[in-house]
Length: 180
Image 1 (cartoon, helix red, strand yellow):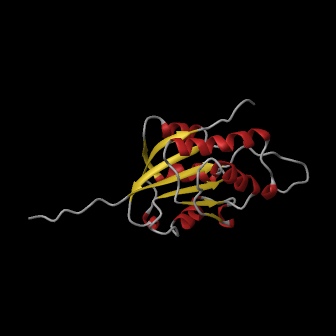
Image 2 (cartoon, rainbow, N blue to C red):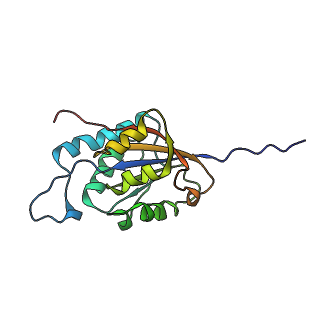
Image 3 (cartoon, rainbow, N blue to C red):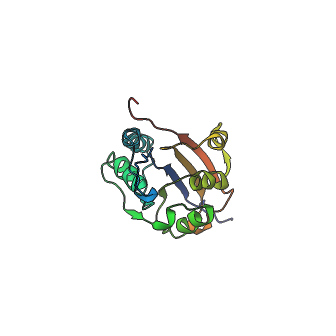
């Protein structure tokens, strides 16, 4: 008799690029606020995640003001937001730095939300996605705009096992909230 082994748990990494930011004169890049369009789009991103049933167990967010504000407006769309960690390593991070932060996530977290910046987030999605559903990879390659939400799924017991090419890009949404 062969022993049945259950498959590794399905995990999801939700990647959210901060909403459209303003560029006020005399304000450092780190302290740039959201533009009016960004303030409309960030809640729309939160609604997309709620409607898709893709709410995270933990959020990791850049310390930049535009990312923090995107997180706040998106999370306000949910009944009870998950814990959030504001990590300075996510600001201007490339793929190696982003993966290092993700690899520290506790195994009990099944869905992780990462809120940050381009080009790092776009590069991360493309690096992790071994394949994508429909035209999602082509769309990411063409542009990963502000407020874009990419969902990657993979099977594994520990986040530190997430590696380039090991995930499936299951969706890419670019929420927009209201008139411009």
